[in-house]
Length: 136
View 1 (cartoon, one colour):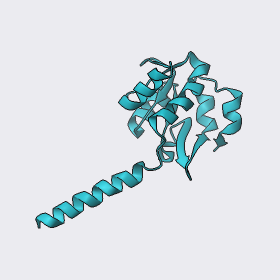
View 2 (cartoon, rainbow, N blue to C red):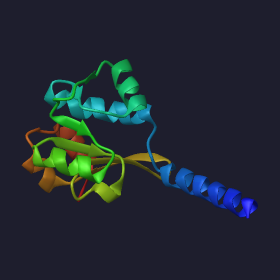
View 3 (tube, rainbow, N blue to C red):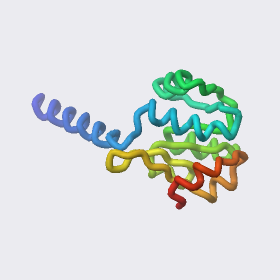
View 4 (cartoon, one colour):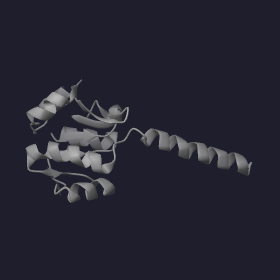
């Protein structure tokens, strides 16, 4: 019985690793957020510790009142969207409430843009980002 619990715990841990495999590293994410934040005073609201450190290292201000917000969950993203913030996430499953999704696909960073949500927020994205992002 104890062996079964260990096996289940191991499989769960491996499953979590597989789910996180598509995430960009905090350093890569921070570089994209820096470009996005340039249109709004070079500040981002972020609660993620490693990403905060990467943003700070790049000279991006991490401030809770920023119009650009990094969100990790649906509830947080919905609330920030309702407040008119530019919501940036790292998973396509949050696309319905996000403005921008930053993810990794086939070993390369990918930018997905929800143009309807971008128009509804109070932040204007730069033309370069609008050209390179895949619009949904």
